[in-house]
Image 1 (tube, each protein chain N blue to C red):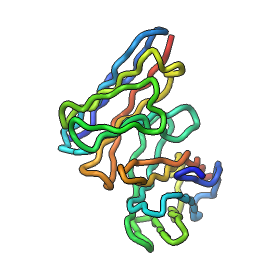
Image 2: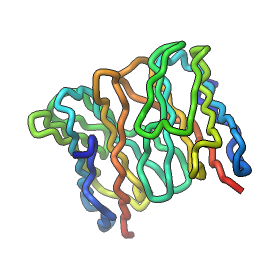
Image 3: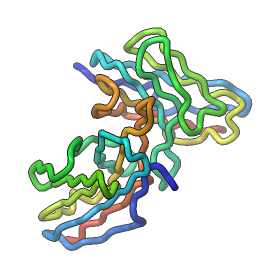
Image 4: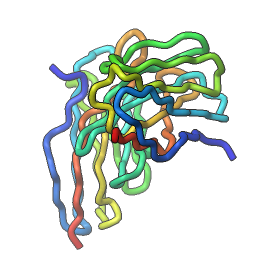
Length: 112
Length: 111
């Protein structure tokens, strides 16, 4: 089954903790993206990567970090520097840049 | 000016009507444009992509692109209650091909 898999579906974080959200795709896509969505809001870009071992900051990168060591994986770490991390996090991928992107099922992160 | 703007909603139409959703973008060099549908609590799903000026039809959906005026629109014909969702406009912008979304517009189709 080809697709984009995000895990976990729900994640709870204590104040001051770092957490890592997983995003894996087996579609052989070059480009991958991380977005954050707050209630009633659109998607805001955190980081994106067009190729392995390269990534760019999006509009709200502060308090987040990523890596792209493998084509199929693009994990997002939410650090303790992110002061308001509670949100719905969405990972997407596209075969190459400038083409359609497809989304995983998302991870809901809650700070407790 | 925001990179991608959608007119404020929500939008409510009766069943069977045409719903018209509009989007403007600021980067004149943008080449790729998309419409996504998002049901409450779910991730966005791609419903239309358009790359050249003019209309593109797929079933009840028509995407329209006007690069000179920097707008892209989505028409939904014969609207159904199942079309009730948030519709997100997305544009590839900038030299680094950043995929940028508008804030979305919530459509409600009244039976």
